[in-house]
Image (tube, helix red, strand yellow):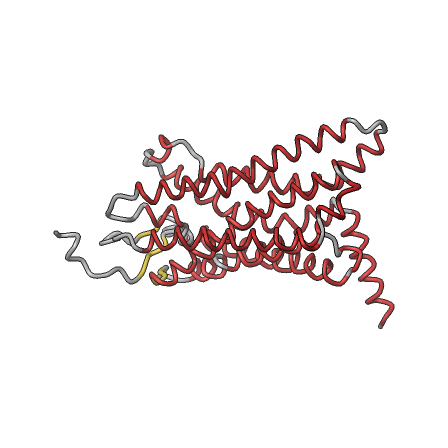
Length: 318
């Protein structure tokens, strides 16, 4: 009854790196620089994929979606995190926390599904090149990308609704930089087994299933590449999917470390473990979106040629 008589929770306190003001200042500078790089890098990729007609293909349509997704994902949390680093009162309203949870989970789910779609695109391009224009037509890849966004929004909406309906009572200190859904769920003064089951089902469907699709696609891709008689042909075939494979490894390596940890680790009451979780989360939220445009621009000849072409056209048009 004591819990039930508490007032309705109106805000959360974001613990973050409280107690380490110098470290907060350092991370403020680092994250601000990374955020600017994210906006410029991904914005440039989107602009190039729109302006250069040679890049009006399914692969670069997906890449443009991925870049836009990275901008949206980081914008849901980084600006508020930067503000909290400089503020003494590190709070966020209950409704603001719910919006942040929804957008963050929606973007994360969408990216998982979108990376699976991109793997399928690479599989068709390498293993069935003659049928590629038919299989990956406008009537196919546009609904595939739209479906990724719809799945992300629906999954996030369902999970967020179930979380915000939980009673939080007195405990309003989130041991995180932002309103990450797992960190918020742990604050509830009620049984969250139902929420955990929903999250398990969603993780299986929208994280592990796309990962399985990626593994199968790249197994078939590698098998096809190894059958190419010349080393030059193998190198050219692999170069068309190496950037996407690199992004997948970074993205899934981080997300699986965060969300698929053994339960025994959660029971450890260790400041070092908390710090590790926070840093991994920050890597997932900042480093991955920052590296995506760098990986695609450095390892992709089409993007580099498009950048040179647009730069030269702009230079000589003046």
